[in-house]
Amino acid sequence: MPWRGCPRAGWLDCGGAVSERESEIRVYAIVRSGGRQHKVAVGDIVEVDKISTAKVGDTVELSTLLVVDGDAVTSDPWVLAGIKVQAEVVDHHKGVKIDILRYKNKTGYRRRQGHRQQYTAIKVTEIPAAAK
Image (cartoon, rainbow, N blue to C red; front, side, top):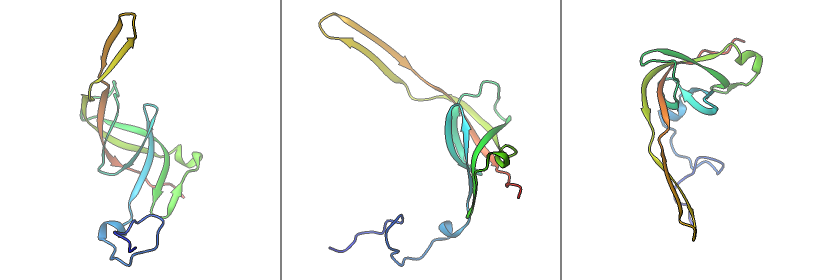
């Protein structure tokens, strides 16, 4: 049976042309914020847990766990200690509402609770290069 399409990861190359977007070198970093890790690149807008001390328009620094610059991967903690990703606060908002329902059969126990997580939208402005 002939293949349909061409998955990029792991299979033989289909011989298709490589687009400009795939051929350009993209710098990205893995950052830590609010107990979560996010993959960010310059210009990305990312939702992180609310940063209560920052106002809209402020600049925040995010600690870096990994930096990928083309083929060069920087994961040394001593080098990464000096690299802080710069981002600008765009917005504070709430996420979608989740409903928490507790119910026990045959006892009449029912509890309903809602929750909306507060987020801060940040736009990544700079990922500094690792010092070599």
